[in-house]
Image (cartoon, rainbow, N blue to C red; front, top):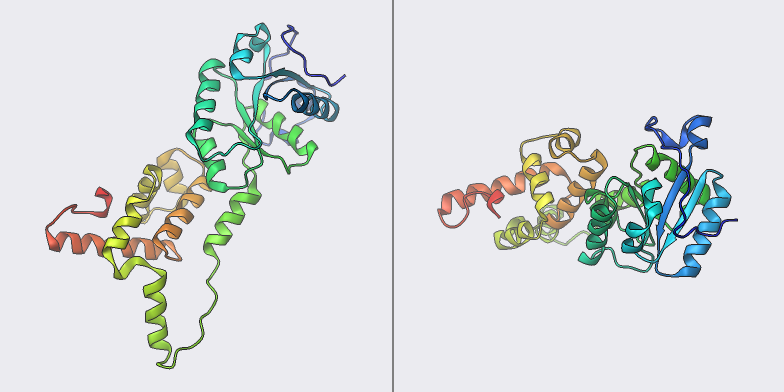
Length: 287
């Protein structure tokens, strides 16, 4: 028991949509069969995962495959509930991972995708969610919580681990250590601190920082300049509010400011100077 099943058909009760709480559903939700297409090139790891998952969740069945192509060609894939891609040891920053996600979505259409990874980078996690992944499972997650996540995703939900996302936001928002008072007094110290912590005094540095924003961060920046809240920005861009919080944090980090108001003021100042100069872009939005 617990061995990954390979290329053998089975009966599967089609899981219907449940409440967004997913893991906290009633007895019926827990009893619904969940068939996982586990894609992992290492056979010993596939078997270890299969044993753990089937022992922890009585309704969970695991079909093991070396790659997405094998899973897509198997006759049992038509009975599957979701796809689990094990990306342990793989950098999520490269385009290879997004290619794998795209291949899984096109080869196994309609099946939600769950990624297993040892990454704790919030930006990596949210990038995968934006590209169609329905669940991100850090390897540090407790086994029973993994089963709960599978139930949630099978019911149509999306799972993002809170810890790395919140930690990233807290690190961005954390105040810098106070500097020693300068002999010239607090006024000079504050001026020096502002110069070092923000590109406001150097428009070329600010332009470079703006050019370093991702296309999605530029869209968020444009909404910030209009004074929109995270909730409204999320609605406008059709993403979660948690995703917007991370984008805002990344923008502040790249522009080296400590709050969203400073972001708006900094970009507005650049707009005014660009307009007065009459050269190049007329607005920071043009970068």
